[in-house]
Image 1 (cartoon, rainbow, N blue to C red):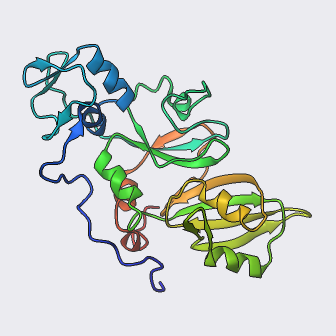
Image 2 (image 1 turned 180 degrees about the vertical axis):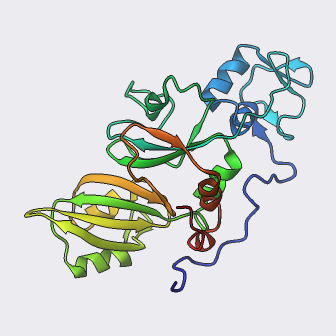
Length: 268
């Protein structure tokens, strides 16, 4: 393989590590332990179901320094849930959140009736986008997957309302400054063309908000469809819309490797 496109990784604490003296709110601690969503944790706390050091706490922001130490839920120490890792083919029109203030359908509709414990999305796809979306209740694993310096690249197939030439494709790779951010594609190529539109393959190594749409809009291109087809070496494949499957251990482990190591690891 050629030289890595990534800049040297910044020094930072390992995902999931804690810094002495750092405090987090009780609801966040319960959520980060994979027990429930933060919203659900706040409900438990406000309902008086959670004790800390033998005392009922009703403040979701009650400061916690030592994780779940001394915490009881319904009178019992919360057991760590079985760690789950799954891939969903997100349909267009669903919001990547547990509850939407506007009452729109969310990605959790696809998990209804599954009997699974609380799972959080690992990253996001906006409402108009579709394709591969990961879920897990393992916050440390999710942090490694989402790490902007070492997480896996994401590959998208994007239908646009014009036929870009090589000059424009190179401009997408060079990037553009927009709203104080530098937006660029790691790679951009044409998959196929029609009479008035084209399908592109675009690879990103970071997850800025609506990055592809904003990047293409800077060059007067409108997105007609946007499908995430791969995260690292994990392919969407023939997973049906709205369907999900568990990740194999090798797939799970490869996604959490630094990107340059993961490219040398087969998960097929």
